Image (cartoon, rainbow over all chains, first blue to last red):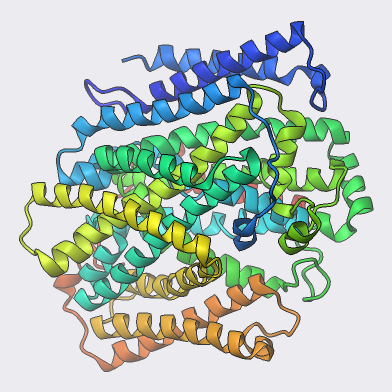
Length: 68
Length: 567
């Protein structure tokens, strides 16, 4: 939905994905440098790094495409 | 689902890092910003109650699905998959897909062309005031109670998962919902439902991916499930030949005729909570496409709900148990399987997103109930019974007040449930009493011109009363289960299936008999309401890939393939 003069819902989705993605990516990068004492299962895959990056890229694309 | 609501484990499952807390706060801030932003676009009743009827098929479709994809749903069905195996997927496939496609292709044209604001509103147009009032009062009452149960459930899950105080959770969630629905109306609820849909997938998708990696792929996962539980846990249809050959104690006739034909059709085609989202579509084609899009996504929800339950059987080091045993032994219950996997795989950041997805699910569940309550209260009770000449501004004002009132009653219900936990069982049972007969009444109204006002009202009443009577009969005399559910081995879910089937059949019989004995409405009064008296715009000029029927066919083919694949 994107009527004249209004902000599309997809822009808000983009903001959410971008913000969350950057926060998760940041936390993942921090853990790369400072590995936790009690890591989660499959920590070696660094899911928060690549998942955070995927969310951030998707969010940035949505923000750009549906910018007001 | 009720079992989830009686969680009472004193320790909490996960610990949030500062970055997780920031993600949770970011979600609340974004939701409130959306509510305040949309206030300026909620000036007329059409804006406030139907989001201006300008939603695209995608928005309406995702919102339609999302209204049903709450956190209670996610955690409860993941727990059911741990307890009953892949049989739980029936509630996402045969228990949803055929009904959603039927709504889009067959029923939506009548709802949309009649320009009704609500399902009780359609009953008024088709059958008259008495059917509308019966349906509206029962729906409004039950919806607001369900919203309270949702609120209580969220508070309890937050206590178990995060250790939060119950009063704090109830206060925060109710204030947030009251603000964003009160300000922006249905449009705000829909925006947040779509946001919640994305957050749930973003927050939950990693669990099955990492779980499959840990288990060594689907084939190895099946072997581990068969070793840790039983071979019955990985078959969708193969074990349904008799009541006692599967973990759920159900027969295939219950799944096909009770769940697939009645309960799911009743819920997906007549529960105004979900139908309201589709009524907001911008045109008839969007309204027909929305349930088809919802069905396409619904087919893949088991990937983030059922699969984690199965992964839990294979990889979790502890054995999960029922609520009663969990409370007595200090162990973990079935319904904790999703938070346990979240804690197992998700480090800082991802954990915050997962917890936010759960919160978003609860909040939009509440918001969906409150916005549907507000519409039915304003149009079908306030305007119909108390203020027939209310103007547009008065309706919007009443919508805002009833939203706040709905939230206030929900808070009251939440605290009532804290003190009298069994209320929840009764409320959820009561809700189910109305759905199956209502489907019979609406379906006959749309497809049979001869159905009369008296037939509709007495059929609806007979179906509802018979459902309550059957439920009470089994409560008083448990041996009656062999008659109601056709087997003394049937469990609760099987009983619900058959009760729905009988009440629907009775509703249809009474509606037909009474209609044949009473005078029909003139054809001129049925225009836009009934098959044969409604001109449905042709889609002949559209290319095939723009037609809802083409995409419904594609969804149906995938649905059949999935059932064969996991037979």
